[in-house]
Length: 288
Image (tube, rainbow, N blue to C red; front, side):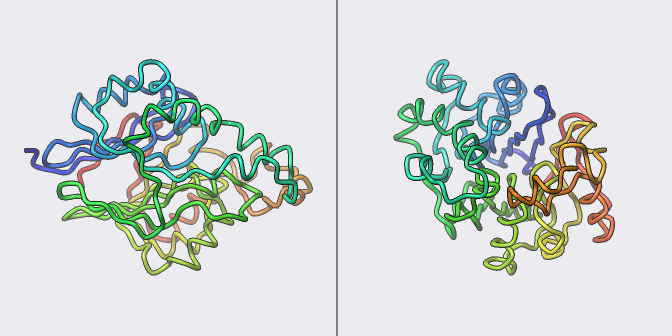
């Protein structure tokens, strides 16, 4: 038995990524994403050989799940004692031929980034997989997880990020909201459908804190602390970095409401957030 519920926010070994390991009082683990293959040693260190009651994959981008896919391809995930893998990815075969989107090439690139690689190893977790439905809840020891948002058909300008799972982790003392990489459009849907469910003590900043949900979503969350999966360059990114300076291109792609991390950090100042857990400072240990 552990005295506390502990959440580890894993620092980057690869350029940027997202990985969390939560350890319950009964010494079970809950893993969220995992980053790239080079991030897996740190993830394994924090798992520490524990039973993984739930491995949650937020969405199919390489900085979130390529490490998990690599481990399945390498040895079928034999290094882990996994109970259930939770995810809800967009249906590749139904979408890859779609043409009525803002930018067809970008849309197909997004679908091809990780979905085929995941499909190639999916049989190795088939008995353990659970396709998450919005509104579902699970309980693991003292931890409750409520899935608030899943993939919505029709969000095509930022298709993979806007397919991110959003879920609230509730412990006896704290609530933590995970936003994955949700962008502005997905944030609008989340706000319309579930704003009454968002209030949380701690929030994982959507899409590493940039090009993410709007301040209206964060204002409903009203966090006392923020978790930033950011190396230094990203945490200190300007309001309009070079790759977001071509507003005409962004408009054509339907991605005009995207800004650098500086904007989101200002929002958190406005909301009065005082505590920031940032992976640029190393792996963060958060007592829940």
